[in-house]
Amino acid sequence: MFEPTDSPTMLEVRLKPHPASPESPIDTLTVLFERDGLALWLRFVAEGQMPEVVWPGPVEPGRADDLWRHSCFEAFVQADDGYVEYNLSPSGQWATYRFDDYRKGMRAADQGAEIMTFEVSPDRAELTGRIALDKGIPSLRSSRRKPGPSALGAPASGESSGGGPGQGAPQQNGVPAFAGMSGKKVGLSAVIEAIDGTFSYWALAHPSDKPDFHHPDSFVLELP
Image (cartoon, rainbow, N blue to C red; front, side, top):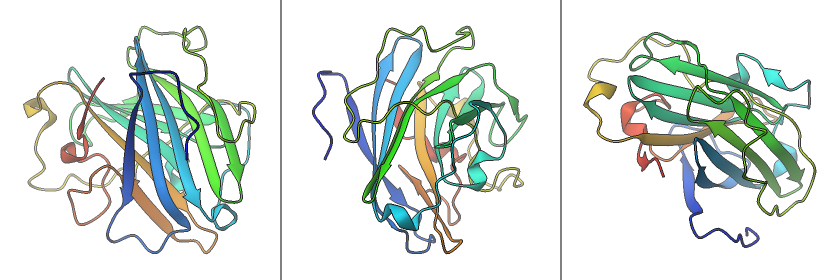
């Protein structure tokens, strides 16, 4: 289990695999998160058979596309007009994308991200990072929040990138528009690649028959 934290505002949720996903080496996937001013602090914790998972190896930190094609942790945050997708890769790379509505107007987002640590043991993997909620933040490294306690305690990897399952897929009929949503909603998700070449897709909610992290009904958390 997690080591205790000293923050009374830390929240914890559990992701679940899509019903159509094959059996995964991951048994549980939990996310701790907390608002840090104009940023959101996140820790994804996967428990299971880690040697059976393909984790991207460390590379030079920075933006990169197509991170969702391999094991990747993701967040989707509703914006004033549309939403922003954040991809955090164990490799240390990251990416952010802005959408005007459901899968419409995809482009690089101004918001940045930071991966603070990625740690793995035979039965546990843990990625800690932060995502900027405001495009006016040039760097997250000056944020006042420091990494929370880690169950594995290894140093940082770098930064992240990515995209959700079905990236670039055509819009499905009947999907509600983001303009009709109230408040600022958040979706959390993960793509897990197994060594046998199969993928499992994890999220807070799975509103469609195929994995679709972009679906507005996947945004089920209120932004803290």
